[in-house]
Amino acid sequence: MAFKLENVVPWGRDLDEYRQMFLLSDRDMEQKIAGFGDGPACFNCKATKAGADVTSFDPIYGCSAEELKGRIEEVRQTVVAQMTENAGNYVWDRIKSVRELEEIRMSTMRAFLDDYEQGKREGRYICHELPNMIPAEDGEFGIGLSSHFLLMYTSLGYQFHIAAISEMLRACREVRIFPLCDLDGRKSELTERVIGHFKERFVAEILKTDYHFQRGASEMLRIRHT
Image (tube, rainbow, N blue to C red; front, top):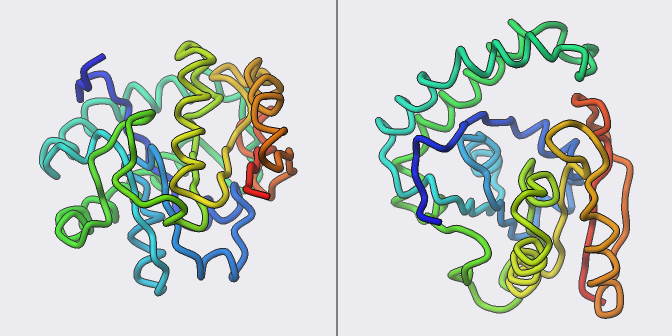
């Protein structure tokens, strides 16, 4: 299916959230990291400023900063309204309210937009859509990350997820996927099937993370080469 910006709901997360979601230690941050489906997160921007080597892959990076800014503004009120309506599905301890969440997300996405054009010139933001072949050598990245995409969008089907994760494992020595629930917060039906597929050739394990905002979303899947 052809990529269309009007189908995208951009909603970016911060460096600290990435580190909590994926249990990224200081040693992990010294590796070459690939983020898949990063969207307008400022993980790349802030990690790069801290000296990390991060490359983000997403089909939205084929768009201009102005196009992305416009789309963010288009969906902002809709997302906030949905979050307000479904507030009971979230844990409001670290973030206290929908209004605070909106401020955090908009600040995050502004940081991304400020870095975006320079990051594209530097090859840090690459237009790419899984499960297509990643423009990288085998094992080029130490860690590959998937935030709020793989295993969450169950409608894409089992074979899509197998193909996407297989390609990530070609380019990355280790893959981490968060969260392990679907869009409604239920445990993803795909998780055990995916583990079963990869466990014979890789080490696959579910780990409890330091991040818990959406109810039911507090675990990640780590798959690594033996």
